[in-house]
Length: 478
Image 1 (tube, rainbow, N blue to C red):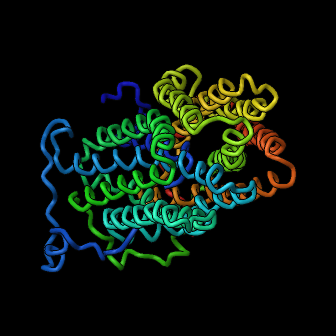
Image 2: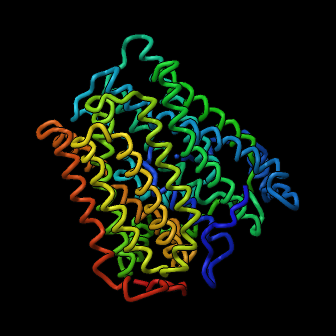
Image 3: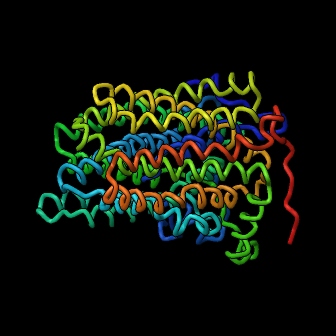
């Protein structure tokens, strides 16, 4: 699928930067649930080459479109299956907890916290660790772990042993594997394709992810209704197994960093943190993103109980809400270059932040107008997806552009530690508030916090600027 309307890299940006920003932005706009490892995976030609002390041969890259590159297509196929599969778990897991196990509000909060706790526990050092490993091997092991963890759910359910705490354990394991997979995934493309194909490769992966977000939740809702939620989870486990096999057959030419290039982990982590929080514009962006994620996690935690139990929607309707909302994300990605060209890159950030922060109020409003609950939830999801993609594409492109290449991994890990690390705290708080105050009051509290999230970028220098800084610069050495 061609991407004529992808965000454009500004002058001086490396080739493919805009496509990489789009993929990263989509990742940050998504609810994280679904990465890592060492040299234990040696069932390929790289092991023999390494043992012989020879350089690893680079895979053959056919000229022309990547659709002719069998090696790329092998990995792409595996990722396509796992992208669709992850949408099944996004719908099926809360259905199991709410409808089959009758989980309380606090238990749902703990379940959501378990799914994203890894970003707080290992998110910060993950970038530094993975820089010392082979990225594809990390991804292979992460897929294997996720497949086995998910497969345990239908087995336990069939035996009558499934409990909410087991869902929490599975969510924690999958979350840890996902952290390592995602960080590796963002860095492996240059070792798979030629430099002039990086933009095309990111575009193809992003297009697949967009389609998965559009069709996946609706298909997941139908699948849950037809074969039950635990069996639907098994389908997702199979998709991770397919990705595992595809990665085993994929070849790359990545070389491990030489041990002498390694600095102490804490030194490398500190350098990344100083780079992020030493930039006043990045500080404001991180503030808005973190507070917004805190609020949206509170909403997302209570949403299954609100939609499935209080509003009485079916799992199919629950999935359709996500699918229709994802249309906004697709249109937001397409419209971002035009919006940025019209109002300026800098102003796009506060404009989009105002829009998605205001849209959160539509969720608790659905309790006041239950007859209009479905369209209200769809419209809220659509507006939030559209404006979050506009916000993320703009700010991710900016931070990738200004960050030296050697700090990109640590910059992303540092930001994710903050903006995703607040999620498990928010999920637990949502469970406590939902249990003590009720689901709808908790949703209103989240809506107020969401509204406040925009203040970091609304009150600041963005309105007085049109373009954000473009020149890369190195941080001062300590």
